[in-house]
Length: 167
Image (cartoon, rainbow, N blue to C red; front, side):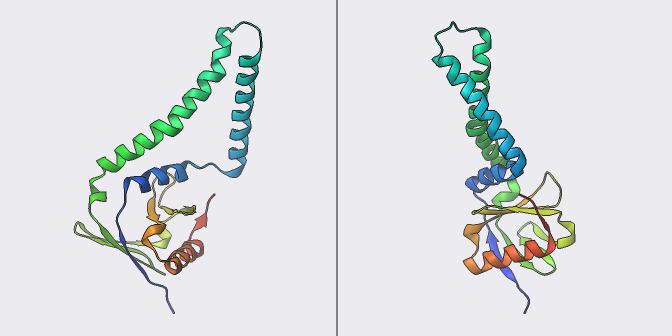
């Protein structure tokens, strides 16, 4: 029996914000390295704050770096994702996706498109989203809320069968 999944794709701003964070999620090795660097910078900042010695301009470097990363990660990235969502007029049009062994079949009031699996490069997932990549920098996003539990597992199975999974 062939698997055919039909969903009505309606992307929300929150989907776009989550997709950007999933897209930016590093490979496990780089994640560990990043956490270690952040921990080292945090320990250095705490050590300097707690030390009785005078503050120098070098004291502010780790604090400014941590502040910049926090503002960028929790402020700029979500703001830019929301801005891109608002700029993308295609997302205002609901689309019907039919997903099967041959690929993705998309229909909307703007037209139709068929994307075979071999035109997609890789896929990435978390608990809420699946991203399908035709290139390293561009992706189609699919929110779990649009699928039943069985359809979600079938979709994951089709993606795993036809595409390389990245972490």
